[in-house]
Length: 315
Image (cartoon, rainbow, N blue to C red; front, side, top):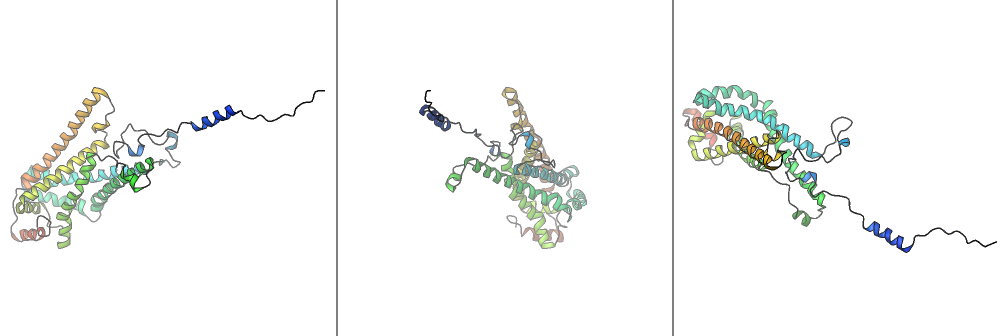
C-alpha cells in the first residue's frame, strides 16, 4: 500500500500574488467632477439644465419639505423677498414719476403721494414691505456667495490660507454687481428721505415731492447725477433679476447652435429694452417735472434747508 502525502492548503504562486498586488495598485480613482455643482460657472444662479446633486429618490423627505442644501433655501429667500420689494418699487415709481408725468404738476401730484404713503410707511407695513425684504435679499445674497466659496474650497481640499489664495471666488454676474452697487445708493436715499427727517422732526410728514424739488434746486448737478445713477442701477438690477427668475435671461436658452445664438441675442435686447423703457419713464417724471419745480418758499422751505444741511454732499 503506497504511502500518501498529507494534504496541504493551496498557496498562491508568486505570479498570482504579483498580479493581485498590481490589481490593487491600479484601481481607478472614483470619478470626481471637474467643477462641483455648488461652484458652477454660472455663479450662484444655477442654470435650469444643471444636474441635481442628489438622486431623485433622496430629494424628498418624509414631511415633503425636500432634502435640499443651504443654497436651495438661500436662493428662495432671495427670490421671494424680491417679489415684495418689487411691489413697493411699483408704488414708488407711480407716486414719484408717473403721476407727476401725467399731471405736469408737483402740487397736483403730492396728494396722491400722501394718500398712499400710509400703506407702505406705517409702523407695520414699512418693515414688512421694505425693511425686512430688503435685508433678507441682501443678506441671503451675501450668505449664498460665502457658501459657494466654502463649497469650492472643500471640493479642492484647500486647508491653508496659501491654498485658499490660489482658488478663485465664484463668478460674480453683472446682475449681482449692480445689486452690490445699489446698496450704497439706496442707503443714501433712505438717509435723505427717512432717517434724517425722523431724527430731526420725529417723522417724515414734510418730506414729499416738494422736498425733492427743493434739493434739486439747491444742488442741481449732484441731485441729477445721483438720482439718475440710482434709477439706472436699480432698474437694470430689477429687470435682469426678474429675467433670471422667469428663465428669460440669455444664458438660460436651452438651444445650441445658430438658433440658440439668435434667441440669446433677442433676449439680451429684450431685457435691456424693457429696462431702458422703465428707466426713461421714471426719469422723465422725476427729472423733467419734479426736478424742475424749483425751490419752496416760506417756513416750509426753511425747514427743507435745515434738513438738507445734515445730508452729506448736499449739505
